[in-house]
Image (cartoon, rainbow, N blue to C red; front, side, top):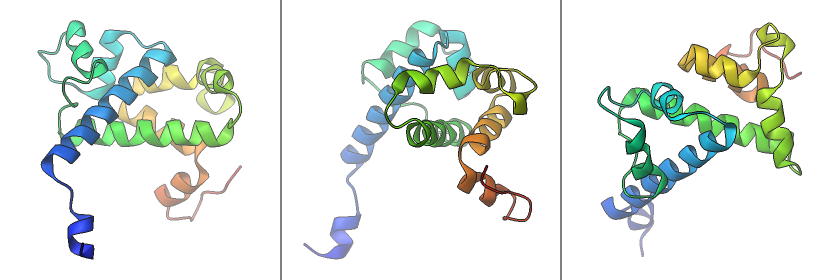
Length: 147
């Protein structure tokens, strides 16, 4: 097997990966306590998406839409999940508690509320709070620092 063939993935493999990612994202948002309407809005799913359609993603029947807006949001959700896992490596409950607890940097609003109310900007703000490397990259390192 050549290096070139090892680095290319088949359309089926890419589709399977996107389906697994959709499942993981939906399960995570469910665990965080978001309702169907909040999930649809947060992921910027098509306007005609009904809450019952979310089962398609949860059950692994199809991937999330491959749109720039949805992909950006998924990228930030994955970044937040990774940062929470790094911050609280031994306690899943602390991850959820942190998302639901008032936070001084968000004017005493819980990070999850910031995400729901502010959409993409909220995702970026919460991710930057959790992930100092991401924050550094956002500001080109000029103003950022790890807390």
